[in-house]
Length: 373
Image 1: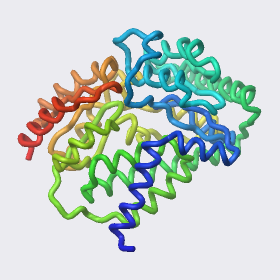
Image 2 (image 1 turned 60 degrees about the vertical axis):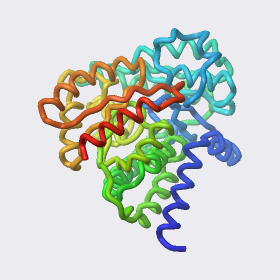
Image 3 (image 1 turned 120 degrees about the horizontal axis):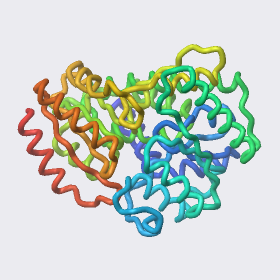
Image 4 (image 1 turned 180 degrees about the vertical axis):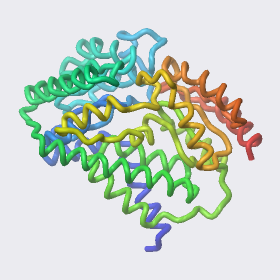
């Protein structure tokens, strides 16, 4: 088998996992492992991992909504709505519980709705401090993690030791570094956006050490695509919509780098050295920046996007706006102004978990490509 067929076989594996997370979940359950749903993007997966359970990311799904509409107004994030819809329909049956941080108004509203809509799966809520830069923020978050551990132990019987958490943090650090390297290589090789997305998306449904090994196997056989591509940068909360990715594939685009919460934004953080691994985990969130969901008065995300786009030679930036995501909408104004001043082409494409027709997006992206080639 040649390297190209090896690459395609591995990419098909990533696509399979990304497209059918329930199958992956059932495999873990068959191995006797417990599953904890982790509401993305910043639930403390490391704690779940250290307790010997499988953290599985919750991002909802592209689907028609019916039951969830009884609990939400129409003008709220479809990620939250589709997550509750999946819960009502039984897609998460088998999970021991779910973890949800309080990062936006939609998440806060979802907590109480979940209790009534999906009473069979307990929810472990965590109120994260937005004013997190001082000692008080760190101490509050550490106490929050301690409460999460206690509740997880109560619900599952699993325990968390310092040594186990330390090992899990190392596994997550290794995965973050691997994904950084993969992103760089994917851009250089001109990988199709749909393939790149599948590699990132599958990470949410796998144990991180297993995903790291699979990504490294893929990187070992990746080769340049051999054709000219239009290199762009993407930014937003989500960029996994099949309809949108197919359009980007057809337009011969390749993603050179991204600032997407579902993708590379997961590797922008660090794990500062601290007295205990729990302190390290608290400091991880307290030092995070570059995200619309986290208080950052200097809006460092905007300068980071421009720096990354320049450094990777992106022809333009695609802002993928999740409909009704207010934090992202606020940031778009700052980014648009910064791109205009820097002379970097920018386009905003609005997406929704209920969206089925991408014709308008396709026309806009085709025009954008003609402008930046």
